[in-house]
Length: 119
Image (cartoon, rainbow, N blue to C red; front, top):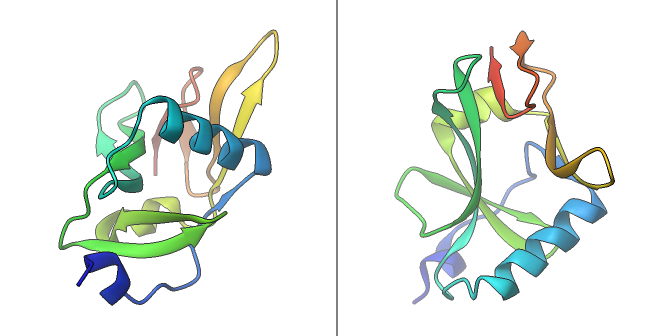
């Protein structure tokens, strides 16, 4: 039986704008993401402020929590939730900015690029 079907989904700790969800569907199709890979959101050490966001498609791991976001199954390492709770992810497609934007109320410091933070 599929690992995803066995997992209980709870309310997601963060939100995605409609434009972010639409862009994720485009990426999934364009990159031909394998069937077993799900949307991963998380953090990793690095970046000019100490931590960077992780956003991409990946295979599930035993530490992952499962959520439903805009019809996509999202996975997140349970240990990352502390840093990402109540975060909003948007996708901007303008002349001055293009890409995913992260609005994180848990960040005590951010950098100019918008992808690095400290908490």
